[in-house]
Amino acid sequence: MTTAEPIGRALAVVDAGAVERNCRTLKGRIGDRAELCAVVKANGYGHGAAACAAAALRGGATRLAVAAAEEAAELRLHFPDVPLLVMGALTEGELRTALAARADVAVWREGFRELCSRVAADQGRMAKVHVKLDSGMGRLGERDPDALMELARACHDDQRLEVAGIWTHFATADEPEDEFLSEQLAVFRPVAEAVRDIAPGCTVHAANSAATLRDPEAHFDMVRCGIAIYGLDPFHRDPAEHGLEPALQLHSYVADVKRFPSGASAGYGRTWRAPEDTWVGVLPIGYGDGVRRGLSNNAEVLVGGRRHPLVGTVSMDNITIDLGPETDMAPGAPAVLIGSQGSERILTEEVAARLATINYEVTCGISQRVRREYRE
Ligand SMILES: Cc1ncc(COP(=O)(O)O)c(C=O)c1O
Image (cartoon, rainbow, N blue to C red; front, side, top):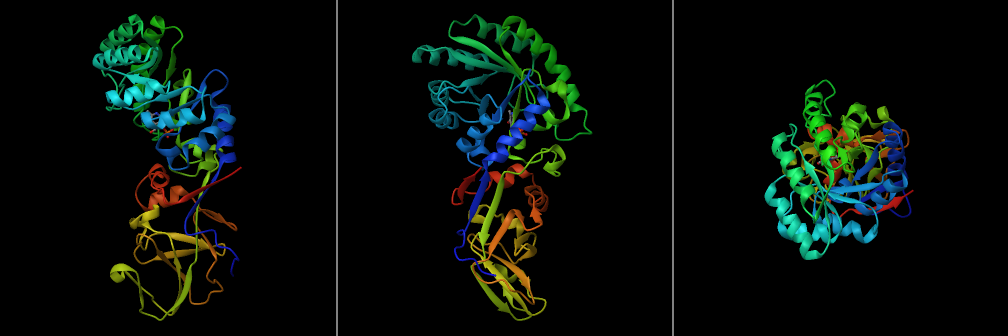
């Protein structure tokens, strides 16, 4: 089988329509009372931040969240009026960038509150702050509820600041049997209510994708969904179980097909040798594109609608696959590393399991060298 025009060495095809539909599905789960904030940090988990943000907004998201100030500044160019939240820790310079982009920021220390106030005054604006409780994640946020309340009052009393949110983040929402989510909720709820007494208009938010799908008690005024909007399963199984459609496919093509006599080896270190006479396809995609080296002799690739084992060591720019002793595959045949071809499909979750990691890391790892093409 040949194709006239190979798609190119490495291409991520992103179905923006799937992102839109996934957001609609999530909106259906949370109802009208809670807002959907689409988390598009890390270039939209590797899918492309601006295109996915636009799709998410079409699908019912009303806000966007990122980790870094620069990400907010970039999004602001595309979305002049959409509320943005920077969730991460910020240096003074980064805070200046975030506030100049009119993004809301996270606050959990008095020193940073003072800095926000000062930078807001310098820039002649109000800063919208979301006070963050560490209810058990053990990462960013104030652990002590009393200290957080004091901070919330100080923010409220500050002419330059508006308490726009009270929030937290869950550590184990993706482990359905675990009860720590309920414990975190029990810590967060009274603090959220007390902050709301001080700042009645503020947004209470806690849930990531897993908590959104798992527990309506975690929805509050807004949910912050990342992984699910891209159609990936927060529980590391099959996204279809939650009505989610994977948005990203990773394509390459067979650049060469060669006959391997029994015993001939493929790639660095000769980690694979043909067990019998066979045909080997060479695909011009490798770890420089985000196909991790841990997939050496440990993955399958779709060509001609069938699975073929990735054999040998993944190199920076190439991989090799065993097409079998008889093949009608010829140079130019399209190959799919993530996605479907014919009736076969390879989920990001499958690739993640082979690497003993999570789907997040697989799509975030697709490198800049891989062209993104958007389809509806
Ligand atoms: C603070 C915070 N909220 C929400 C999210 C979105 O989580 P998920 O992608 O699991 O929906 C993240 C992502 O890591 C996060 O760090």
